[in-house]
Amino acid sequence: MKFQPKASHFINGVYVEDTNGAPIDVIYPATGEIIARLHSATPDIVDQALTRAKNAQAEWAAMSGTERGRILRRASDIMRDRNRALSILETHDTGKPLQETLVADATSGADALEYFGGLAASLTGEHIPLGGGDFVYTIREALGVCVGIGAWNYPTQIACWKGAPALACGNTMVFKPSETTPLSALQVAEILIEAGAPKGVYNVIQGYGDVGASLVTDPRVAKVSLTGSVPTGRKVYAAAADGMKHVTMELGGKSPMIVFDDADIENAVSGAILGNFYSSGQVCSNGTRVFVQKGVKEAFLKRLSERLATAKIGDPLDEDVNFGPMVSENQLNIALSYVEKGKAEGARLVFGGERMDGDGFYMQPTVFADVTDDMAIAREEIFGPVMSVLDFDTEEEVLARANDTEFGLAAGVFTNNLTRAHRIVAGFEAGTCYINTYNLAPVEAPFGGSKMSGVGRENSKLAINHFSEMKTVYVSMNDVEAPY
Ligand code: NAD
Image 1 (spheres, rainbow, N blue to C red):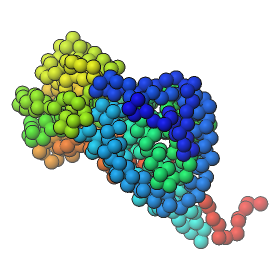
Image 2 (image 1 turned 90 degrees about the vertical axis):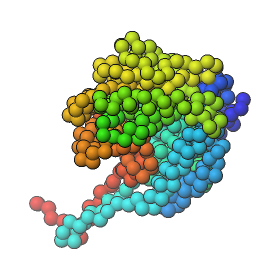
Image 3 (image 1 turned 180 degrees about the vertical axis):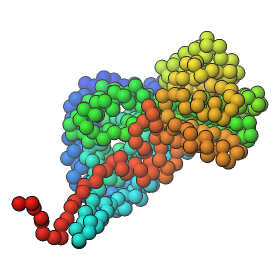
Image 4 (image 1 turned 30 degrees about the vertical axis):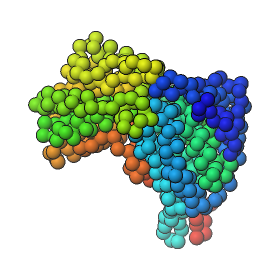
């Protein structure tokens, strides 16, 4: 098979297999062809990974931040050197066009390794004077063994966004990729070893939800970082709470994008395209509820349809193609079922809506207009290329409607009125907001959700606080006064 790795798991610096685990077929979404067969981790594999990660942690944490950082930065350089090969692998794993994977996957992972590698040497505690010569100092300590659990839409990026800050702080990691896209995390593990990471610092094991669940409840694990859906997040958060473990939850969304009638319509259409159809709509922060002020609604829909008609849909390995298949037949069927719901609920289908011919999991980019707040297509995360356009009259009305959701991952506004833009953003109930742009996620900026969309933040200096904790040390320079 074309992309068969040496074995399913990567533990303590080497590939490890246990064929007793349930099979995992890796399917190329553009053709339906099986490109690799892996096995889910057995309890023995889970135990091996956690034991090795636990054994490696003290030595890794004892290295200086400069040394740890150097290894991460070397790994970043290797990833950039191999970007094309890694992108081709990512395209086979996910179906995303090579045009996208060349700039948004291994490169984003490399950014995280470089950024947190750069920070590693500066991670310190502080000195706090108490008066009379007494003082406190704090020591920033690693948490221990961290578990990362990934979703299937950005497999390389997620493996690095979790691994890089964890390792920079002196933790070790056991990472479980999504069973749908298990291949690229193995490459990240190999590259870290090549860059000089000690064995056992970053391990990858494959598996379905039950393997993830067994990692979360293991007493050797200090922290769990999940990227996934809200229902999974709820289960993982509850299981982690039982062991009082640290968590980061990067979950789903149904984010609003507001287009006022004074906006630059061409830019607003560009934002709506990026925020609904990049990666065939399989992006957590997508602005899938597009509120367009009534005065510009028809002009917006006209330009949107004209530009969608120029999308190049096809073979994701062709670098001119900018819209690929969905990740799996299952995800395609979920998205198509929402198209039927939208029609049944009375929304107006203005573009797309059909599955495309062939063996791949392709559907057209799809736009519904005249969507109302109570429709399922406006309330539930679809995680596919289905945009809902809703009308509005006033600023006050649209902000209330934009926030009327259990989710709070992202939100965007397009307007040329400066004060209105900042007023709207101040009112958004969302972790990541955009003014006159959409869906950027550079490593320098915190990323994460409010409400049901998550807990904690990835990227930026803030991620350090989610992968380390402070030890407080009181020091007396005076005699100890006791009452008796
Ligand atoms: P999912 O929730 O089905 O699975 C996510 C991961 O959790 C997988 O690796 C899965 O095997 C594992 N898992 C499932 N049940 C588990 C359990 N009980 N215990 C431990 N692990 C378990 O999500 P998905 O379908 O892979 O990904 C799509 C979802 O991810 C969408 O909701 C999307 O919005 C979200 N997402 C969020 C972000 C973010 O940064 N906020 C980024 C990407 C995707």
